[in-house]
Amino acid sequence: MDRLTAMQVFVEVAERGSLTAAAEALGMSRAMVTRYLAEVETWLGARLLHRTTRRISLTGPGEAALLRFRQMLAIGDELQGEVASDNPEPHGVLRVTASVSFGQLHLAAAVAEFVRRHPLTRVELLLVDRVVNLVEERVDVAVRISRAIDPSLIARWLAPCRSVLCAAPSYLAERGTPVSADALAGHNCLTHHYVGKSVWQLQRHGRAISVAVGGNISANEASLLLEAVRAGAGIAMLPTYQIAPLLRSGALVEVLPEYQVEEMGIHAVYASRRQLPAVMRSFLDFLVERFAGEEFLARI
Image (cartoon, rainbow, N blue to C red; front, side):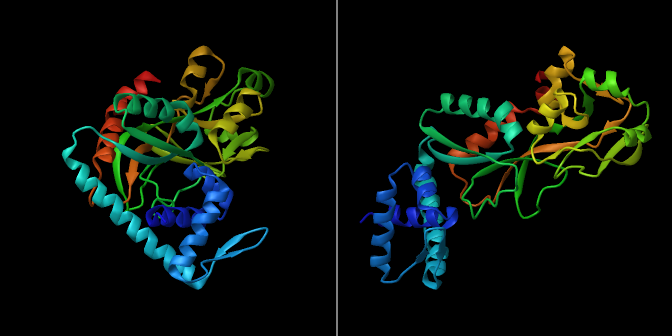
């Protein structure tokens, strides 16, 4: 039995809670995953998983094995990084996560360019609209858009993230254009679950303004809000990295341009500086180059 692969299989199954999902992530058949699980239980002489038709859960020995296997796999990754440090060409696998909207619009093309430059690398992209636990989900780099980064993580600044209030011309023709922040109370404001769901933070002439907003559509992903805005459903706060071409074409109109939305930052975030693999250092440097601050904003 390949015990290293068996450990990887067990960790994937434990983290994903599904043999099928683990098989897809590992690029192997479900039958092979089942075989590795049986072999690792035979190797350790203990039942590691409770399996029913609906769910998989860890036994007591399984929880202990998961902790140890994660540590052993991390040590293996570090050793591989040390051994490969003499090879100037980045190589290896990176797991990278970002939001759906930023990932689709900008990160996917960046990753394509990175692997073109470095053909010995492979990148696994995870696009989700939740905060991923980098350690538990074995993610190497997260591209996060936030005002503040968890102090337990390391972050490299990539670019500012600016947002504007916008609406479709059809909505403004029907409902009128607000002329002040207070006028937003009379409009259908479409909101994001995690950013300004009930209050929008604005600034005018250097003065901070909190505006209570509400509407009949809320979503957990900016792309969903964008489609609702384009359909004439209301006013939304959306990032310029997503809507700049639509503003230029006139498909969307900026609302209250004299008010500024509180700015956030785009960061590349990772868990530890210790034994940073060469491929990860190269990828981080590449992201800094690709999303070079104001230059990135000028290109969108």
